[in-house]
Image 1 (cartoon, rainbow, N blue to C red):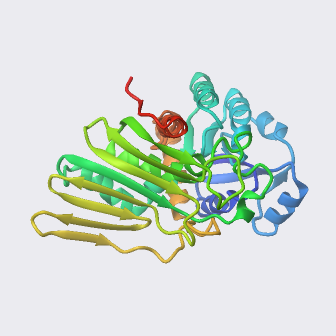
Image 2: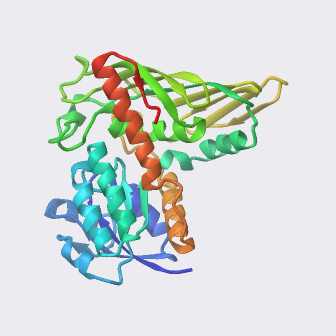
Length: 342
């Protein structure tokens, strides 16, 4: 098994679970650079993690021994940074979202594909044990034909969260509750229930927040399978609660709520996975969750590179949830039904 030399680019809020994961993977990786142009962020990071620091991208691009780079910078920087890394032959693990628009996201995925490097996207909800168990049940046809899949993402973010420069803007973040928070649960929903072909609904910015992008979305959706459901997403629901995906099938019903799972079959059987003790990042502290699921992302990404396969959340996989979010916002702004078919 190859030992990878790795660079971490971006030392802001998202870096902690990645740094903890890389420490756990010390037998498989060596962190060569942790990069931020901000002296304050480098200093704060150095107080917690003993990784070599740099203030520029150039040394990372020029070092041919570095095979992997994690990009944890704001969304509007992703296309440029990932394209330069790909051109330099580095595999890229990218924090969600791909970028601030579908056009830029598609360019990024194409740049990595054309350069022949592996692109993975950090959508870690797929790696929760409860989610993996539900996926296994569905693969075994354990719920029968799915007739409904509905998703509720009722989170809380105080105004102070959106007062950070660029937060909740189209220019830096590309969107609000869907692209910044809900993308994780929506990706998991698509992975479990399959593609959506039609949406209709509403998207708004409520008086709860002063921000440019949406903080509440409600939509009805139709899946390729014929199943129907509701998507309800907001960051206005104080104090916040676990995201919930409920699937109704011809053999039973399953509810995934944060890190918990409950399955009830028509024949009387039941299965449960209890929630862990974390807050899950649903409230005022968006980083209040364990790093275990990020560790799962990293293990899968390194395994994919070593085996020459796609990671579980590839660039192409991430484009699917980006297109759904675009459709939800388009339908929400026009209050009309929008087809995703074709």
